[in-house]
Image 1 (cartoon, helix red, strand yellow):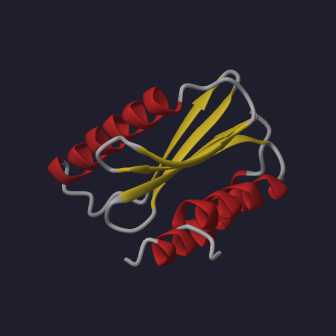
Image 2: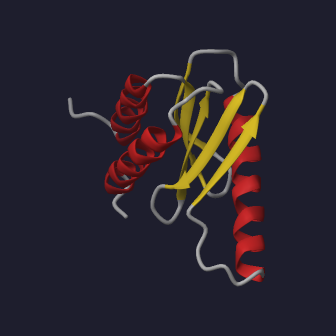
Length: 124
């Protein structure tokens, strides 16, 4: 039986862990619904998806109102790690949670590649 789209996206998320220092990742709809995830700790996927989509939407509005072009990514830097969000097609977001010491350049490079693959899986 062929892999479902969710299976394909889950494999893409699991491959992100190979760069190291990624605690978890998810593909969510821009409406705030979970599509696929790879979390190793107890994170409520529905809450994570809703909050990530709200954050991304607010950032898009701010960037637009300030006439800064299109939003590329969001990076939140906190004491215990980072949260990075990037578009994965027109209707989905790729969001990762990382440890504080992640190699940000490598993470952003791999996120860009993964978001392209997810966009392809979604047919966008």
